[in-house]
Image (cartoon, rainbow, N blue to C red; front, side):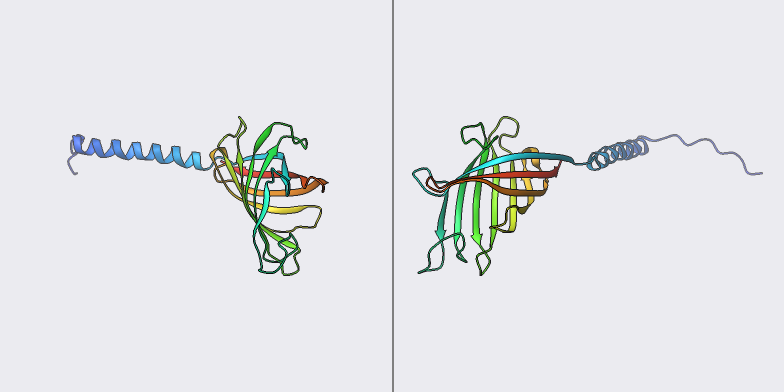
Length: 187
């Protein structure tokens, strides 16, 4: 029969390695459980106040085909926008943010617009946060849909979609109110 050996005593070096391994396993578990939390879903309705003419315009054509009229239906026309966004359709309702970016009439027949802009929040709930909107939509349809491709602040890692509906137009003032329905998932 083989003799029974005495139990090994943990050395300081072995104990340090085990402590490090234990600490690392706790940290890995903590961070992996954080990463698997389900994303939040946020839905909101915003109103873009768009002024295409007048002293306080918020949308302007900045480039297009030479010799052609720069309009929404003219292929190649580029617009820059800085619309203010409100809580309700009333332009005097509290401001939520700004819609800042560009639109390009991207279809040869003028039917589609490629949008690239950000919703920059200035209200108390989301101040400093942004949502990035991008995609191509049929600009003369009642409802246009674009992708939410990212976000910052409270909307980090945002993904989702928006729909835009023009709910009123005042041609003499060049003023349109556009309802924006946002559905996003984010951290």
